[in-house]
Image 1 (cartoon, helix red, strand yellow):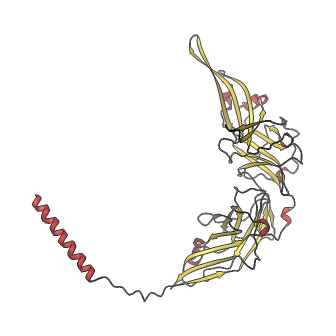
Image 2: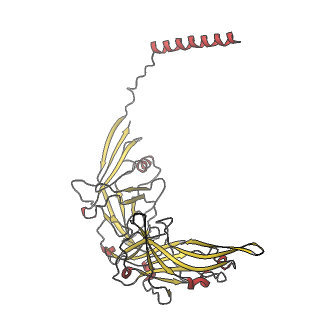
Image 3: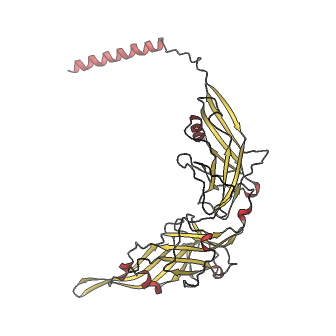
Length: 404
């Protein structure tokens, strides 16, 4: 048997050697000259845009805001708690509640009592995290709400004495029966935070999206007694957080939308833009393959912000209107896979449109234009304007393509 395998191995080595020698002596030769592929470039400078405004909604931002900044007025924030919590479980006879606190957190180390918000509660006032805007609260009043006044402030420091965060704490034990009332199917648990006056100092607190362990919450402190034996019991002191299920800051942009000549984006100002480019299926030779398509738009020197996230999304359809201000965004975009989020850098908004433009060439999509929006991760009180008339560094799309 060993002799048999030895013979096979020897034959295999001989066969491999002969094959390799033949390959070396007779390499494959192919003449590629009949392929007339060429690389070319095209620059599209015919870019134009139109700004439009919507009533700002800040339901997905990482902070809640209070006070005035850059012409915007954050006059109230709403925080809601869900009915699906086991509120009825608080009534367990083995639990003895010591206190109930409403707590929010801030990374501002310079908090002062005169800039603090007042806490309010309503069992029947509702809001929408994704839809509510200042237009819904033009005549809003907290006169029918329960007021809990100003908070106690607790500063948290690390072992070296460095500031970590500030806690704003309200005692809401008086709401115990209301919060645990499960017999009322229409009961909502909505809190509102409102600056103490219109001229209060601007500040921020973490929203429920902004920090996993420092989101707005109700802290419950209670003692639970457990019967061990007939004549033996044990009592545990328990702290339990109930996180908010929705929150939103209501910001009034004033008359900022009347600046109808400025192309740009800002979530707090409600500013968005439409971008048009001159490109269709005939812009490149038939069968052209795009290797790169680089869009570059300079920022206005007065509003240059690095790492400002901007979203560009091709439009699915146009609308027939001359209006520039809307309650909600009427422009529908395609989204995946053409939606792109890119940050600004060195005074430019730059990104690749290769996939979308290639699909225009193929005929999969039509070029209706783009919607440009700010990301929810930006500071809503900032704005970025585009300089569409920059002569030294004009807005362009530079395309490199291969054609036959």
